[in-house]
Amino acid sequence: MGNRAVSDTGPFIHLTEIEIINYLNIFSNIFITEEVAGELKKHKISVPKTVKVKQLSSYAKDNSILFINQQNLDLGEASAIALALQEKADYFLTDDLDARRVAEEYFIEVHGSVGIIMRALKDKIISKKTAIKKIIELYDKSSLFITRDIVNIAIKSIEDF
Image 1 (spheres, rainbow, N blue to C red):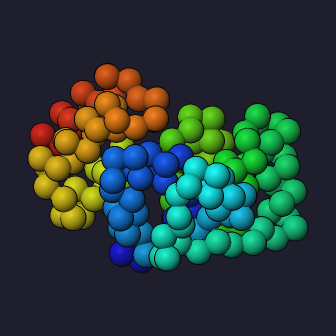
Image 2: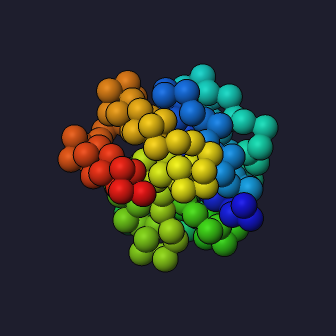
């Protein structure tokens, strides 16, 4: 695929809850920070072997602190955005609206769990039926806060695909 992504904790948790963590394989390289790895460990989620834990440069650490202090992000999200900038990642994966907004301010393309499912459909990894099923499971079975409107929009988008 040739796509480099940095993720915070959210997509790992939500995709694990609906048993599709393997969908992250749509990205050729996924990086996380030590902070995100620690958060995943707390949630008893093992980091897939394809995911690389990367150290932040001192400059990126400073950015991370800035995001915490000025943008009200938590450490995992802040460090992940700083890593995305450091690694010049193609994508930032998050389900957090504040983290999404900050990443977009830095012109980083952002995808959440819904977007990862849509991408798996687009890349012909899953069928429309499976994509719809997993979107509904995100709503019904995961800890992701997602509105019924978003679910309906995603389903319509899948059906029109």
